[in-house]
Image (cartoon, helix red, strand yellow):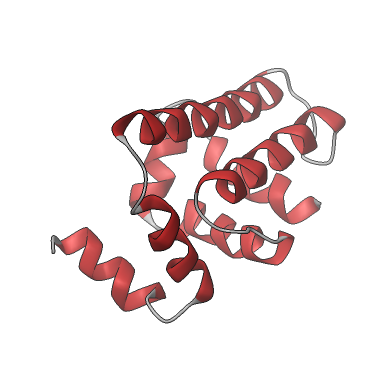
Length: 120
C-alpha cells in the first residue's frame, strides 16, 4: 500500500462511501478508469468555463458544473450526496494537492469550485 492509499484508508476507511468506492473500482478495467477521468475532467471544464466567463457561484452555469461534479462521483465511485460534496469542497481549498489541481487550471478556481458547491 502506498502512502496515498494508506492516507485514504486512515481518513475514510470506515465510511460507506469508501466501501462503495472500493467495491466498484475493484471491478474496473483501465478503460473504465479512463472513462471516469473523462467525466471528472468534463465537470472541471464546466467550472473553468463558468469561472473564466465571470459567472457567479450561484449561476446556472456554475451550478451545472456542481451537478456534473457530483454526478461523476456518484456514477464512478460512490453515491455522493450534497452534504458529502460540500465536505469534499473543503478539501479543494484546504488540501494543497486538491487545491493545486484546480489552481493549475485557473488561479482562484479552487475557491470558486468550493463556493459554487457550498452555494447549492
